[in-house]
Picture 1 (spheres, rainbow, N blue to C red):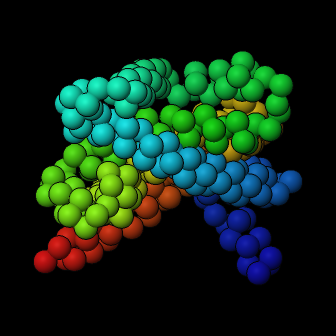
Picture 2 (picture 1 turned 180 degrees about the vertical axis):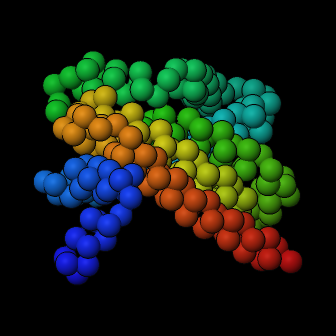
Length: 255
C-alpha cells in the first residue's frame, strides 16, 4: 500500500500533491484528526443534554402559559391566592421568554461563564446550562402551540374520567402534544447543534474550536475549516433525513 501511494504521489499532478501535503499537515501529522473527533463528541454531548434541559424547561413554561391563557377567567372569578400565583408565574415566564429570545446566545453563554458561574470552571456543564436555558425559551413556545392545538374536548374528557387539571395535562394532553410537535422539536435539535459552535468562547474544545486549533497550529485555514463545515453539514443532513422519515411515519399513523 505504501509503495502504491508513493508511486501515485510522484506521478500525480502538482495540485494533487499540494492537496495531499495539506491533508497530511492538517490531519495526519500529530494525529490532528483526533481533535476533530473529540470536538464532535463534545458538540453532540452538549447538544443532547441541552435539548433535554430545554424540554424540561419548555414543558413547565408551556403548562404555565397555557393554563393562564385557557383558565385565567376561571381563576379571576374564583379569586384568591390561585389567581395571584398564576398571574405571577405567567409574568415570570413572559420575562424569561422576552430576555432569552431577545439576546444572542453567545452573550448568554459569556454571562453564564464569567458572571453567574464565575467561581466554577466546569465549562462543559456551564455550556449545557446556558444552551439548555436558551433552547427552553424556544421549546416552550413550540409546546405551547402544541397544547393550544389540542381540542378542548380532550380536557373535558379528562375531567369526565375524574382527572383534575394537572392529571389531564400529564396523562391526556401532553402525550398528544408531543406527537404534534415532535418534528418541530427535532428541528430545534438541529438548530441547537449549530448554535453550540460558539462554545469555544469559553474554552470548550468543541468541533468548531478543534478546527480553529488546527488552523492555529498549521497556519492553513482552508482545510480544517472546510472539514468542520462538511462535518456539520453531514450531521445536519442526517438528522434532517431522520426528521423527514419521522414526519412521514406520523402522517401514516394518523390514517
